[in-house]
Length: 289
Image 1 (cartoon, rainbow, N blue to C red):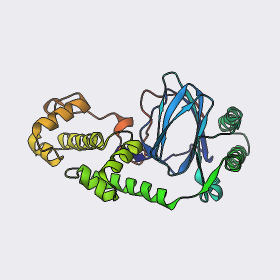
Image 2: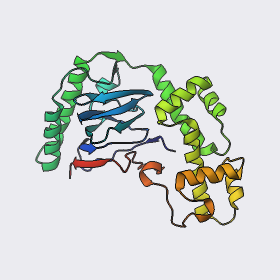
Image 3: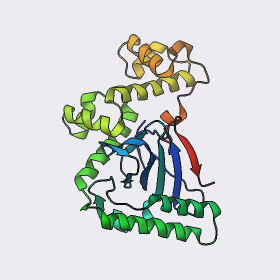
Image 4: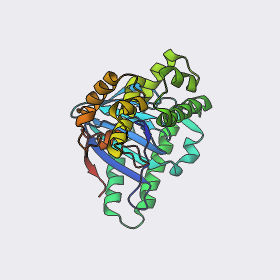
């Protein structure tokens, strides 16, 4: 599936990661970590739980654990990312959410970034405690100064339903329809269409084409038992013409000319627990080493 859970693996005993990206673009995803997104230069369109906002230079966003989100940075933009385990601050985030994820107050995030990055890089005695303390203080300061609300069970139910739908699609991709998906979530087709695009970053039809072509590639690569027509039918295409057109658009090849070693772009389509949502045009220019 394309919208996917990202499982962050920290390098050492620390529970924090920081890095700066140029031209950051990623796919719709979620993780159990909290994330602070700081626009150092330029701007970015950021979607959090279906709401797309433009965030400009000097602004920051607090994306709470479990939120569905994606980032589309402007050309030549620079974006600092703070990613940290929710365990550090769950006494705060389990009770409250920010009324607006875009931060209204100033927090000198450049200084926090430089301090945390320096500690992670040098790894001197007690660096884990010092970085943990810094991010706990920053989070507490944010939740004290910004407007907060008590956690909403209704929003959590919607997001949970969306994640369950993606798993349902992954298992039933060959026959599920737009109406089936809307019914699965208990939503009207009009509302579901808008919600799905905002959460996923693409239309339901585009998403289904990617999933079905991914499955077709797996069948073409792993077995010679089925004909191309049979594979098209098994992947949910009612006509071979539609299958061939979709296959060519996504892979650049016809089904019959697909190279034996062909793989869909790793970062855009990988479907394992180590999923990395960041696309190739993004450039990580500084990180802990």
